[in-house]
Amino acid sequence: MDKIPILRMGNFLLVTIQVDLYDRLALNLEADLVQMVNKTSAKGVLIDISAVSIVDSFMGRIIGNIASMSKILDAQTVVVGMQPAVAITLIELGLPLKGVHTALDVEKGMSLLKSMIDDPGDEEIEEDDFITE
Amino acid sequence: MILSLSKDTVQVVREQDVVLFRNRVKESAVKIKMGLVNQTRLITATSELLRNMLRYANGGQGLIEIVSRGRDNGIRVTFSDKGPGIPDISLAMRDGYSTGKSLGLGLPGTKRLVNEFDIKSKPGEGTTIVIIKWANG
Image (tube, rainbow over all chains, first blue to last red):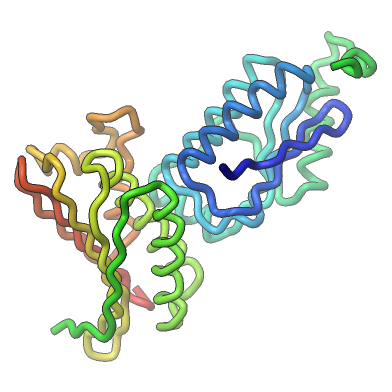
């Protein structure tokens, strides 16, 4: 069974999708990611789809789901690196990915995540909280 | 008149077959020098229809053809299954309608992505969908 690796970097989880997704793989990623958010109390999830050549309605929905689920678990999701052709196709298909934050590349995505997490202000981020597993 | 220049038949029974099928479609599209955006539209449309076929009919058969009409080249993909069929096609083609748990974007969305879209279905016998994307369409 293929699996998409989820990397942890401080407060963030990084996912780089390097293979062509099929439905089961996408569903597993969704489940794994949400569990990882819970387990590591991550504050941000960054999904890099620069190597993904197509996103259809199902995968679009999974991306939306991941964002909403993480949100409930108090983590922000940013999708980065979408290819222009994929963006065109998604809109024509009728899937505007509302509620999903996007950025052009990983670097911009990271700074967006950082600003989103720093911004609320009312909560202190305790960085050393989740070292034990 | 539309002439078929090459034929490639692929059985689709597992989810992983979808990846293979998409790659075949991409190869054909590259062969006729289809632009990247149109390729992406075509492959996305293919992916939607393959999923429908797997979900509602437990798989079926796909035929990928390079076709030509005058000076235009294009890719024609035919999806045939022996599933339950679609009782009301106009309802199935409506945005947001779904008997499954999906968003109901599959059929109407797919139609928007390709140049020609033809659907025939008989309840109890199966469904055949033909799409064409012209290289410059």
